[in-house]
Amino acid sequence: MTLTLHNTLTKKTEEFTPQEGNAVSLYTCGPTVYNYLHVGNWAAYIYWDTLVRTLTANGYDVNRVMNITDVGHLVSDADEGEDKLEKGARREGKTAWEIAELYTEDFMAGMEKLGLILPSHIARATDFIPQQLDLVRILKEKGLTYQIEDGIYFDTSLFPSYADFAGLDLEAQKAGARVEFNPEKRNASDFALWKFTPKDEQRDMEWDTPADLLESAEAKKGFPGWHLECSAIAMSILGPTIDIHTGGIDHIPVHHTNEIAQSESASGKQFAHFWLHNNHIKSEGTKISKSLGNGYTLQDLKEEGFDPLDYRMFVLQSQYSNEGNFTFENLQAAKNRRHHWRNVAALRHQTHDTLSSDKQKSDDDNVVSLLAASGAICEALNANLNTPAALQVVDEAFSRLDGKGLAAIHQHGLDELLDSIDELLGLQLKVTTPDIDDEAKQRILERQRAREDKNWQQSDTIRDELLSQGIALRDTATGAIWEYAE
RNA sequence: GGCGCGUUGGCGGAGCGGUUACGCGGAGGUCUGCAAAACCUUUUAGACGAGUUCGACUCUCGUACGUGCCUCCA
Image 1 (cartoon, rainbow, N blue to C red):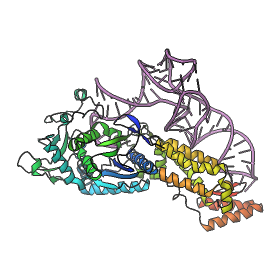
Image 2 (cartoon, rainbow, N blue to C red):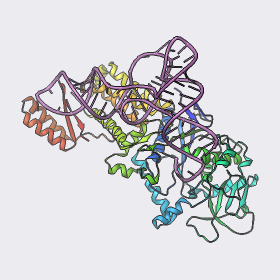
Image 3 (cartoon, rainbow, N blue to C red):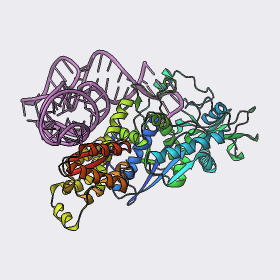
Image 4 (cartoon, rainbow, N blue to C red):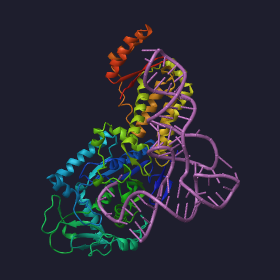
């Protein structure tokens, strides 16, 4: 089984192999923690979580780094304007440090709710200031930087392949640009490695600029440019060349282009072998933007009665490389699908294998197909993370169970399939489908006896009573099966 | 102005040059004491126009529409 991924670098879907043996180094651009993440932000982390799960299922040992941008991300890629953190701080009457802490915690909590596997390293940009300054130093020593009034810049004209990654036409962009760029910059595409705090200001987050990086004796406070942190963090933890770098499609022309330029200039080596980019989902038919108010948060979804895992299911219903469309109607469809899956998962509490019948059932095509499904899910994911195809495999496997009585369901086979689904798709089917308590089971038996006596009134009373506890019953030829009402 | 992407049935969304996607929803039916579920049937596909081909939703070109980036953003 081979894993193929679409590589932005080569613009082809290629077979993935790591540089060394089974070890995969993976870097994911993390959030800027100045606000709550919205559904579009979360979708990206769900996609890349699926990548980690797929790599792991293929026997790779994944060493993954995700940064937390808690400083230096200006409101404009043109290195103008305000810092998001400082802006957020003013908005909420807090310090930038407090803002970063608040939203970092919320991000971590959201990862937990969505069942996202924690990266091996979560690196705050502010914890890597020395490494970032070291990188500036290396670039300066190579003569690739220059200093102007507001900071130390990278001269992109000295990195000849600068435009290649994103297929940029720099001249044409300059001609059509709607925003004036800093006239002190040598090239429009030059970007700040290190920004100076303006003379009359004091920032919550600022550091001394090492004297050897400055071109004059005057001491300056400063802070890192946004692009710097990813290169510094990635290279200091994972080495100069990483296997896979992921991020949003919007990062291709600026952020990732700049990362490549500064990293490869410094190291003289290829920065990443594979670049994966997730497309953006729309929300209610248009792009997500603050002014439209369609950037729903996990809290918003909760208030509408949706579990974070419903959203996870929604995201898995389309491929990471395609533009999706978030609507509550579509989320409802995902919720319904997940509800059905949970009820299939609940069957494992209701079927019991004995050794003999287990063996007997093992010959059944049913069991074979259950076990085959795990492999088929993995195969779907191996085709450039085709999650909709993976979901289809599960649906088909579950359909084969739906029609059967409990006696025909192989508990162990079902259990193994559920484990695979949880490992590969992170839907937490097992932990979200606890068994019902003994009292409820007792009531089901009582109802069974009432039905045998044709005491329909008693039977219906018990059914209603259980329903009020969230347990729905359906009668089959071989007895009652319980399900989650909600 | 420059660069790019998309257009599949009520909604979401895959694969595939010739054979059912799948899910969600709607309708009818079977089953059932009733119900629910399940199952069966059904509902509506490939923007438009050419071309290649024995044959195209699937390849090529054009048109229309939509949309993204270049400006904060996954």
